[in-house]
Structure formats: C-alpha cells, structure tokens
Image (cartoon, rainbow, N blue to C red):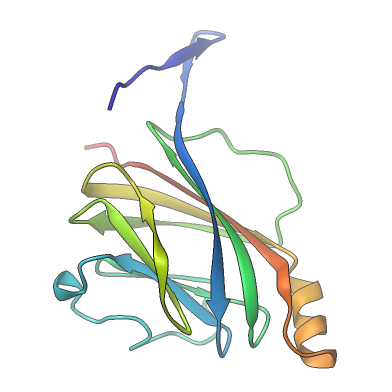
Length: 163
C-alpha cells in the first residue's frame, strides 16, 4: 500500500485509502465489529455486551449501542493512513477506541455475521472513531412504526495507531 501524505498549511493531511458502504442489522439495540478470524476473539459478539454504552472496546472487537431496537443501520467505513481531520456535521453520539486486527479484516455482527468484511489492508493496532446521526428518529420509528432502514447512520474511521 503506497503511503502518500498531503501537506496543507505546514501540516500533513491524512489520505483516504478506502471506503465501504455497509448495512448493519441491529437487534436488541446491539451490533458489533470484530476480527474476522473468530478463533482469536476471546469473547465473541454479543457476549458481555454492555447495555446503554454507545461504544464499548473489547479485545479484537468493539460494540455499538443503537438508539433503535430492531432495524438496519447505514454504515460508512473509511480507512485512512493517519488521523483524519474532524469533520463538521451534526453527530448525536461519537467516541474513539483502540482496536487490534490480526488479519486486517473486520466482520460486522448484528443479527448474525454479515457476509461483507471491512478491509483494513493490514493487521495491527488501529484507532477507531465512531460517529452517529439519526438516533432520535430511529428510536421513534422503531417504537411507533416497527423496523427502519438507513435512518440511523454511522461513519466509522480506522487509522493506524502510532507507536
């Protein structure tokens, strides 16, 4: 993977290496991301899920608490060569954690394991930022109307953790 950095006003700017659009099937307000090789995940999703915690860091896994009970959330996963700039936007929740990948592939879990993987390009330690919008609306829709599709939206940024 070629590493290029752009310079802007005397500082380097992270370069986007890849982006994927995914669906996460949320059940009981829970979904998660974990190392694709399940054998190296000590406690696989959904075991030990913490109810009410927006972003929970685990060993080779991280969990997200959704505002909607049962629905499909829209996820944009982006891989950067360094810390991305904070983007402006209306985010209802956000958080950052450390994440270790052995294979460089991340499986999405909700009501089972999704077929599509997030491809990081390499294993190692990563920093992850999760941001979300549409929480109030998905809570209302799943309570009043049933399931929702794409109402709750997530942007998940991965970049190599320094040192």
